[in-house]
Image (cartoon, rainbow, N blue to C red; front, side):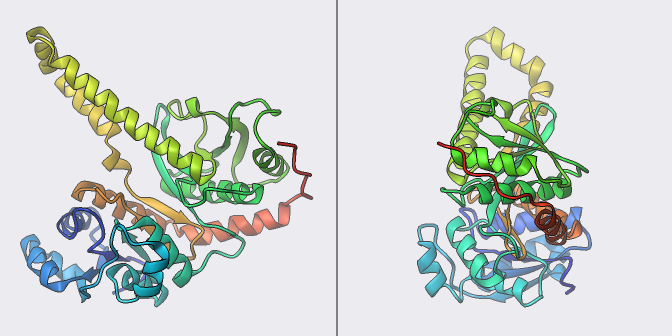
Length: 349
């Protein structure tokens, strides 16, 4: 197996593993004929499922372990006792050069802790962040951090901006993405000292993206910028709020169409358009978050993802490998180090 186009998969991670994982692998294998897989997990469960998918087994190598990280395991516990788990062995395969990246739908905290311990961080990055993308009126936008770092310094936010822009260039194909700092208002005097200082640094540094200043929560839907930068606390709350709003909207839409015979007729007439809308907003289409800043390609799938969602997460991994994301990120960080201006004093909170 060649390292560049091989993904190591934690086949036992996620609510629907290993069935959804292997079905997702089968879907992805048709999209990416040159991609190979290292599957880490219980071979007594994996091999019978693989047989259902014909020649897929020829592109997969199963490596047995009957240990897995549990959804409720604490990251420190997984780090100390999880050396033989499917998650840890998949990460080790990247460190050993057997795979170009790793993908898991398992415990997020454990995956981050193990990845940082085994793969370390990219030089110049203090803390990795979780970056994902979502639909907007203009196409798609990137947001980070989605939950890895609750408390952030101005330096952290600046590094997130550099990493998020590199992610947007690879996954969205943008030459010069626009970047905004999430704040309680767009005016320069609003917000606490951390975001003000980060904004000042970004305004005075020449980088391969356009910093537009502050953005607000109502800028997500119109896609005012390509990359939204915030701390992990705010980013995770924003993500869960958006997911909940989408479910609430879908629930109300279904209820409205069931209200009367006339509304049910209206549904039949509108069904093709509603199907297009459903596909556009389907969270499975945007599954697959990248741990940016880790010295290796580490993709986190949603724990409840089905086969289609897992296949799309594999696609994010393929984009990162083919786009040589970490090499691009190192170039941007080196440019940042050369261009960085003297640090302004922190603004008063």
